Image 1 (cartoon, rainbow, N blue to C red):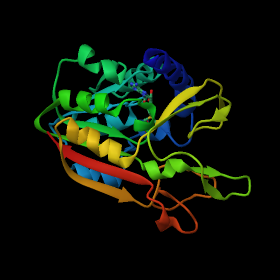
Image 2: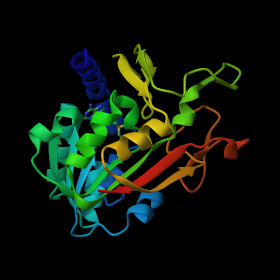
Image 3: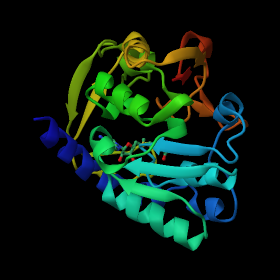
Image 4: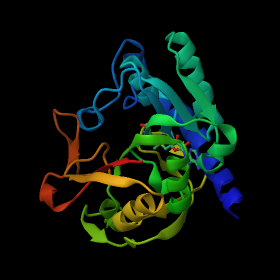
Length: 265
Ligand SMILES: C[S@@+](CC[C@H](N)C(=O)[O-])C[C@H]1O[C@@H](n2cnc3c(N)ncnc32)[C@H](O)[C@@H]1O
């Protein structure tokens, strides 16, 4: 069943990739002329990456991976979407960068890659596509050197519980705790306005589930930070501020919207 779900999701991400690549939010042209896609938060919380080996899990079409490489990291990006990895490789060639991109389901990565890294990094919209966090955390640990750093910044699970009514109110509707969803297609993605026709599976994980999976896999958590801003327009009333983050016009501080974790093996 799991493989079937992974196949469904891969088809969905292959459909999304060209839409994202053509979107204003990903701004590929700006990236080509030197724009970094990394945010102050992860730059500050990870620190200097120069000369370090860095594995980027669920790298999509690689803009963040290549941004880390521009800062001197020896970067490797992994994603299960062949459309995304093909595009990442072609941008990497065009921009004369030296990033390795690997096409793999995250759960199969230990079979595809026999290496450990100084840093394992993953960000913005990753855990909700993964059914099993214990298995995910064991892949993270497997690819981390002893003493190496794991870093994640992702949407806060508390943001997943709301449904927006036609009147623009937010109602707690979905479970905060572990839950599987199958969304039929027919909606635009978070970037670009085209309709994505294919269905996708999504999984909710609570913050406790995430932290406990990392601890059980043998990592020592250094910090867990929560932020009152989002990387994308999660609900229609949110507004983008001049610092590039999205916020609610009212009661913004009532919502944890992103979290980051740094951990050591
Ligand atoms: C929202 S994107 C990550 C966004 C990325 N931070 C960016 O801004 O481009 C999620 C990525 O996870 C990948 N993905 C989902 N499930 C996966 C799996 N089981 N194995 C590997 N990659 C997966 C998708 O192909 C997609 O590229």
